Image 1 (cartoon, rainbow, N blue to C red):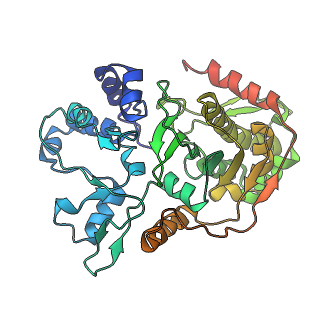
Image 2 (image 1 turned 180 degrees about the vertical axis):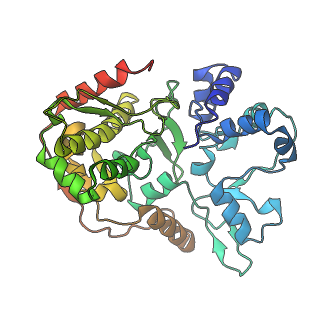
Length: 376
């Protein structure tokens, strides 16, 4: 969520030939969160550190390397899903774009990058002799853990919010809304990320002096649209839409809706409206949506399923509470152990189906506020 490299992302997109060229090259338009953007920031702001760089790895790559002794750069490995978040990896061909990395680093020096490990085999061995599977990015691991298939859209409500779908084909969205990532199986994971999800619930508990469940109950005691109160939930800037310097906005506040129930409702609706936009962006890009599954810590809130179904205009499924990112890692390890053609299938238990009356007017009011604040 460090947005300091937003301008560097814009520069790289321009230098490589424009938004569509960048999206075609690496599946995504660069924003501040991509590794390439941060590399350029370091090259411009900490040149002495940039000159010392010999290898670049993501956190899970570094941990796997440390487990192998952390000495030989030849032991660095990653997977397609995490590599596709660097901004210098083409998920369609599973190859690095070293020309983009060189532009980011402002240097033609040869930099060691982790080898790309196959998802179904072990990629290394710890110093104690324990085999290491490829690993994955958190959302890719969650998709593997919840056993998402083509046609499934997963909404993950963590600190940030994500909407991602398993796809058989890559995406190249020049608008920057949908990131064209790879998944943990060899397929693709078009993804929309918002910076503000569960943190909005935390803010609501602080503002209202209530627990998370109490905030949910208050929200359900209000009405759709919170009697005209709307929230633009950009408390920490925003990634989608790309507004790194934005702040949150309450709109339509009056004496009648200045009460805990309407404030709670507006905060949850505002947070989920951003993710309704995310689902629509996937649909607009041709992603087939058969099911919507909601996971993550905030999915347990009693108001989330009802309000999400109303805003999305579709039924939603809430799988049993679990650590699906960790489950995905375990499933990947089992896949490597079994050396099978496909990942093993586990019984996740029964998901809760929630279907609420659609509330398109709430989403429309949110979008009016979203578009009115573009230049704020």
